[in-house]
Amino acid sequence: MPLLGFGTWQIKGDDAVRATSVALEAGYRHLDTATVYGNEGQVGRALAESGVPRDDVFVTTKCPGDRAGRGIDTLRQSLDLLGTDHVDLWLIHWPTEVAVELWAELVEARDDGLAREIGVSNFDLELVDEVSGAVDVTPSVNQIEWSPLLYDADTLAGHRERGVVLEGYSALRGGTLEHPVIVEIAERLGRTPAQVIIRWHLQHEVVVIPKSVNADRIRSNADVSDFELTADDMTALDALG
Ligand SMILES: NC(=O)c1ccc[n+]([C@@H]2O[C@H](COP(=O)([O-])OP(=O)(O)OC[C@H]3O[C@@H](n4cnc5c(N)ncnc54)[C@H](OP(=O)(O)O)[C@@H]3O)[C@@H](O)[C@H]2O)c1
Image (cartoon, protein in one colour):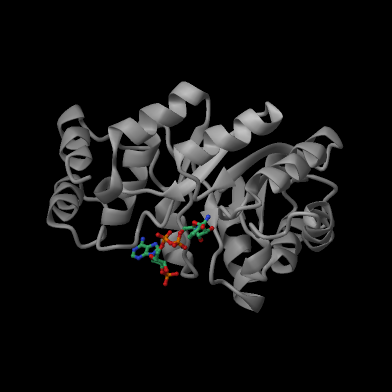
């Protein structure tokens, strides 16, 4: 699973085709969408038109949390829209009281080859354990809100102990881009605050999926491989959480 992906929440219609195309051109090989984003068709179109082989791109979509009993149908609709016979990762988008029943359907989809990996989103570790224990399959991934301001070493360690990949979302929201500590590090390194935040995720080996509709931002958010945060910078960023 590439640590850097392209987030597509709130990008609709032609914008979704355009933004996803720019992301693929810029080198992103991991796309994050969901049934409720209403853009799987556009993401799929951009992927098909990009010329990038399907197998080179890690595609995630998500099932609404209340679809127990209709999970596999929901995934088949996603696959039709995305124009693929499998996704690389299928997630339960949010927890509900039917999480265990729905999780069993994700396991079935994985066993049938419709999803290479399966996971959850917005689950706390207690609920991760509950679904894991119920059908004896641990989610591969938990996608949760994550940024330096939300950093919690115990949460990260708890995921690692269980073998669950922590995938962060909304890293650029909640005041992170304007935070003085982040702005100071960015100015010192001649980078943008977004690049510092994305780099912080990569150095923690936490998956990060920045979203933008702006082509320059899409490109610059992926341009993070030629600099490194020092151990002191990492500690200062961790301390914001
Ligand atoms: N599982 C879940 O429940 C859940 C929830 C939320 C998000 N997600 C996923 O995570 C992805 C990322 O989260 P997110 O969409 O909340 O937002 P985000 O990546 O934190 O970005 C927030 C905003 O920052 C702006 N931005 C992006 N790059 C920037 C830059 N270099 N400089 C300044 N501003 C910049 C974007 O605006 P512009 O577009 O105008 O550039 C965007 O609207 C989503 O797209 C979605 O795929 C999942």
